[in-house]
Length: 364
Image 1 (cartoon, rainbow, N blue to C red):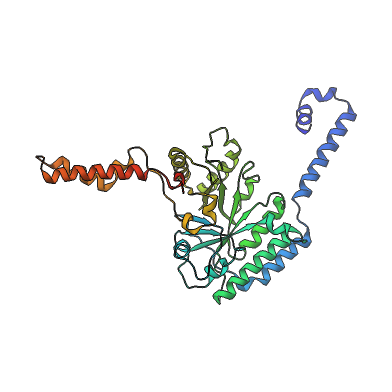
Image 2: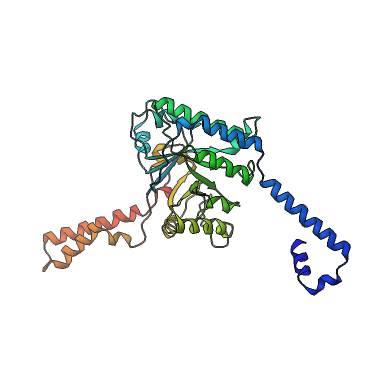
């Protein structure tokens, strides 16, 4: 009605509109604008709470990480005591690691200092999970969650928290954009890198949040591959266009990190072409991919099995194959040694045919 009124007001048709209708349209416009502005307002009591919490944690502030990661992984499971060999490898496997600090042994494994740890460790904050288990306002409960995490890790290290950032997930139904913005500012004031997790069907419902300097990047869940392992076509990715536009524009202005997190059902068997397309999409948008089944989120052995499947003739481009090809091409006559080269080339071809079968498609 507002758009209709604007068009009527700016045209000659407004003169034929009854005055009582114009008054109703004006009233509707004013009320809708007041409603939108009130929904964006943050109560002063919550603002004071966040400021006070930030001041109380000033001694725990860390230096914000500015280096862009070149790889990342996800592990939402527990850590045993002592750690298994796979868990030790997982801790330092990537430049950035996302963990669930609510799981047993996570804070100890990250903060003990006994093993090498990824330069950047992000604690995944599930706002829906934390808020549902507290009678406090959601902003209060998640602020208390961050406070406990930072103090616990700092106590274990003896100086400062080992967690370098947060991944804020499932916040849309519990925080207004205004509250989300205030919480991001609060978390950033502690030196934490802030990532917003998005997923279907809405993906990033508030693209303007990505424009905040305090937001380091986005975590996109199942952006190119569905949970069932099917490829998302262009029509299925329509909802993600505002999200893509948001991170592309930010990447042009500053260092902005995009993490593509593809979780698949246990029974899913995605085609190599589908998995390879996800890697290609990631390279096109300078994103970092992680693809794994649900069990990989809780198993360190499966989580570290990340490899891009080869194309049909990609194995021919490998250095070892090209060297064998050069030796064959430069040979003047066929001999026992060249026959050995042929057998070696044949075995390499068979081996690479097996390598093209992605770990995701293997039956366990």
